[in-house]
Image (cartoon, rainbow, N blue to C red):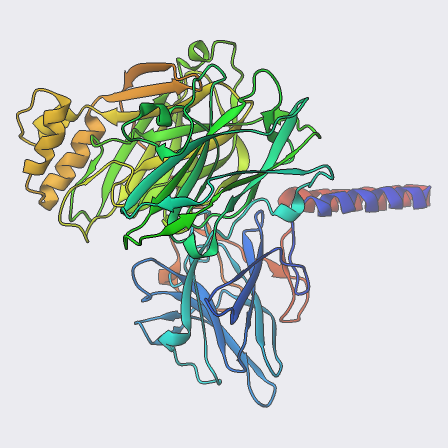
Length: 618
């Protein structure tokens, strides 16, 4: 009896322990990795515990000197957060949480928030492994967030801690990747299908949008596309800005050949429902195991429009390209058919951004109240699982915010540290549900301090865009839902007399773009009525109107109190503290672990129950 009770208790405690999240120790496998420099001297591995909000790094550098890893921002290295360490000739190790007080000078933090898990050196490499909280209470530590993180890596040739710009590198990385490709299933019957241009002569123009229409795989029964990746020629990859694959309605009459997507022949701009997309900095992407792009049924598209945006800024002649998208598909069906919903600011010159702006916000509204009517059939709630953000060179941040019944519900996705050179499809940590009648707002943040003339919305890289692609299931017929402000109202607010939208756009060139007028224009654009354009896969278009709601900023969670040093009083933020996790061992390489209150109470209650039972048994 006692043995049976003890077995049940141990089983229950094991189940509780297994629910506490992914705990990373000194020898745990780190799933993610990346070289941080062009010569492949610096190699980074990392992984994280999303529940405990702890991230673990392992930095391996081809040196026998000191190594350093930290986080910086896009504008300056001053204030960068840097953890440094190394092994002295006598075998002793040194390790410290520091920051840059200027471009070249390091200073130790008053609060030591990085925990060393291992430091070793051999004849070739120095390897340093440590963990740190996503958000410490030390103002010198940069937060680890779901934004793009600019990772700073540096090293020395000996143990003298001196920064050398030739051995310092910054790389943009999305650290908190929710799904790793190795965690996903790869069907044994996988088939590959390429959608590509063949020996296309890239024009000697700054910007070219090349389009052609291609058939999807011909299959006798339903299949699912479950993965895609770019096909780029090595010597041309810097010229390919993005690749999009649009599904065509089966009633569409499509042209042949290759032509300018948005040129003289409007037929080459047909088909507007994105099914997969790649942009600068992205890699392959595999859908979650329960979703895929359906092909092979009468309701599925049979043809697609392949769009490739080339940026030939050096006007190089005689460059041929065969880029495209590789699709992976299978007969092993997933639970849901997926779709892509395009949101944002409608891309045309009514979208303007003043020159010399430290900050300028643009908005695109989507109202879903007409979705079911336009879909032509009852439409279940939309379940969003991933996203792709897109602006051009002036973009600094984007977010998509959801509203229901006039109240802000959630921020679906965002990146407050957007990098044009790292545009990739990302998974949400949860499934965001969109119901009929919800409003979706895209906000884009721009900076144009380096420009002396207006930037308009348009296809060229030197123009701007404000787009977010939501990956969702189950698929419906809505391809895009985008907005733009009443430009006549904006012009009037800026003191310009205009009577139609064309005059409104032209009037922006007459404005003296002082800081005051920049703010006035931003306010006018936000307060103007939004025209909302909704489009389906069959090119059905409906218009509606709405108003931009306010965005309530998401508050940051509490910071984590230091476990390795004193937190100064001035370091305490209004958000407060979370107690530091207690190490389970006295070793400096012990993993930090925390037990939830529920688990702790359960353990205490179960122990009391067992003791009482044993006592009764006696």
